[in-house]
Image 1 (cartoon, rainbow, N blue to C red):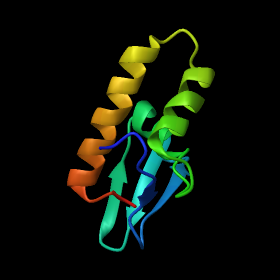
Image 2: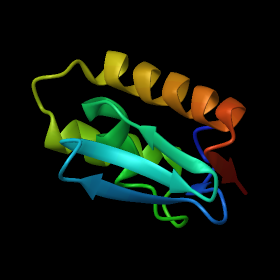
Image 3: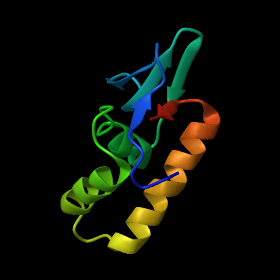
Image 4: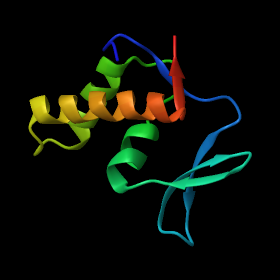
Length: 91
């Protein structure tokens, strides 16, 4: 995924915190996807306006102890997977 791409959740899908599950979930018409903490943190920043670089910058600010290079690689790999899973689309 291009670092300048602007990801957005797939139409009809939404992210929410599920208290009963203790995690973020993606809700879609046919069901739900439980997310781990990292996926929830990344997708909580997806607003359809910020590009991948801006999202990585924000995560780097939020998690200053993480290696910025590793964090960037993990975020890009996550977006590639999320795109393949059909969770997101981009411009």
